[in-house]
Length: 428
Image (cartoon, rainbow, N blue to C red; front, side):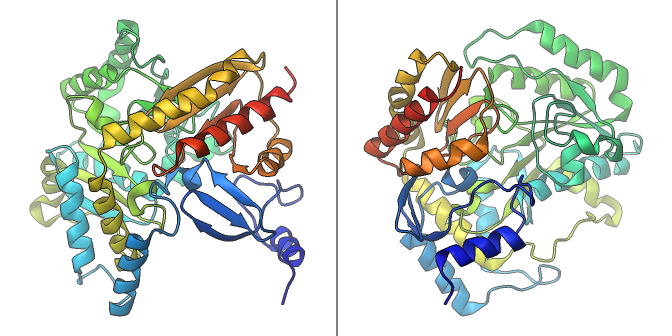
């Protein structure tokens, strides 16, 4: 039997982790088990999870309801191809998603991951306009500071300058980019920003298939919060210039912003919406691209078929986990639960405002952000958090929390104390 260190040595030798160098990898910690909001390492240390495993484990780890749903499905069958066959978990999931998303979204395409759901959305938009006799509409408009995934089409609509994918720019489809939405949830709408969008649409609408944006919160591009009213105006501009509106709700969906979907902060509906991450409660990889009848039936006219078909599309185990997760979510009062979570994070992070290293603290729903004046060194800062008994993974200038919804006030306070302690040791 291998020792803990032998496993870690093999990991370092064999496995290439995300956003990590093989020659100088950041430290990794061997997990033995996880339950609720706690991760237990193989050396016995217990960490309070402030990340929900990249924002997905909203009900905590090892939840008995989701465990039971997967075990029940496993006894039936773990997978069947979705071409020519179907199954109850997928049908039930589609029914649940249509019931909780904006009314116009009536069709569901299941895929493997959030990034792939974005690929699907972009392909839907292009194929739709092709069936409408407008084959030149092949490109997209996206705000800078946006992030939509790591596959090629998804990378092409991420920030081309300050994002993580600029090394691939020459190989990517060249899209149209506009400024990021002005920050501030309650800040008045700036008409100059809308004018910039309108000007881009006026000049290039004959080539633009869609406008893609993360509603209300630009996540991995900087945890930027902006006024939802911009989305209402963008909807009108898309209608005026015959452009499909795509919402990337992969990170914001299922309650994270204080409403079930960030879309619910507006009075409009996108033509296409991507969901993922928390869809299965963080148990299995699954995503969905929802669209309206206009797009779905437009593509399907004259015996048309949508040209995408992942091997593990509609995986029954993943769909069963998602159904259980959505059932749990329906038992919450999202506004009440997430408002409470936001209040706890504001209180826990408030002392950081007095630190010279801190530029700004902002919270929205289940998202708490401490923005520093300088970027942190992940290699150095991650072990410090582990020593303090918390799991927090910063990036750039941001130390942030996206905890499970079942976390306690005391656990949030422990996370806040750890952030204060670590930041206070950072150079100004």
